[in-house]
Length: 325
Image (cartoon, rainbow, N blue to C red):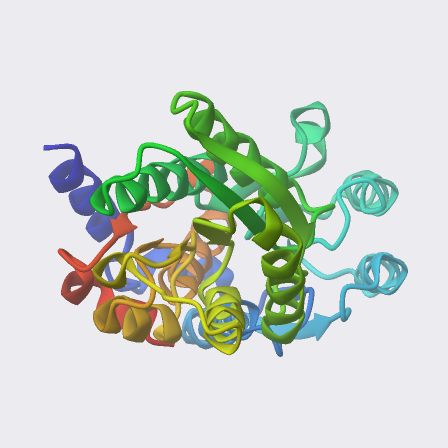
C-alpha cells in the first residue's frame, strides 16, 4: 500500500505543466548551480531541469564549480549582483555555503536546494529542498546488505563503505542510517569507510587497497559503494583481485544507494546485489515544476520529498528505464 500511495503522489507532481500553472514563471531568470556536470547524476539533473524550466518560459544559467566551495560562493555573489530571480543550488560544502546563502537571503533571492538539504539550524536560509530523503537511501542500502549476506547463508561479515564526498550532508545522512541498520545486526560489522568523492576510478583504487588491508583478517564480505558508478569501480577492483562477486558465487556482496545504468546492468548480471532510486531526471522534473509553482504564488513545503525505493533483481525491470541515464 505504501508503494502505491508513493507512486500516486509522485505521478500527481509529475503531471505535465499547464499554461496557467507557470504563466508567472515566463521570463524568470534562474541561476542553476551544481558541483560538476561530469558526474552522471549531476549532469543528468541539470540537463533535465534546464529542459523543463525552458518549457515553462524560464531562462536558466547553469554553472558548475568542480567541487570548489570558493568558486561556488562567488557564483552566488554573481547571481545576487545580477539580480537573478531564484537560485537553484546543489552546494559543495555545507559550512562554506552558509555566508553566501545569508547574503542571498538578505538580497531577497529565494534559494531552492537540490540533491542534498542543509543542516536544520540553517533552514531559514533556503526556501525549499526538493529531492530524496538520504536517510532512507542509507537505510535501504543497509537492509539490502544484510539481506544479501543472508542469501549467502551469512549472519555476520566484514563490510566496507566507499562514499560520495564525505563533507556533504547527504553522505553523512546515508552513512548514519546505514550504520544504524548494521547495528541491529551485530554480526555484520562496518570495518572501514573511505571518501570516494563520487568518483569511479578513485573508488576502484580505494576498494583495491581495502581488499588488501583486510585480507589477513578474513577478507571483505560486503561493499557499500554509495553510487552505482562507484559500485562499478568496486566491481572492477574485486575482479582484478581475483575474488568472487555476488550471491550466486558466494562472493562479495555489493550494494549502492542511487541508481545509474551501470547498476541496472550489474544487478541483472548478478555482480551487484542492490541499489536504490535517486533518479535525477525525475527529481529535476519535480524541481522545475516546484520552481514554476513558486513563481505562481504557491508556498512550497520546506522539504518536498521525492519517494525512493530499493532495487534488486526481483524488481529491477520496474526501474531500468528511469535509472538508465
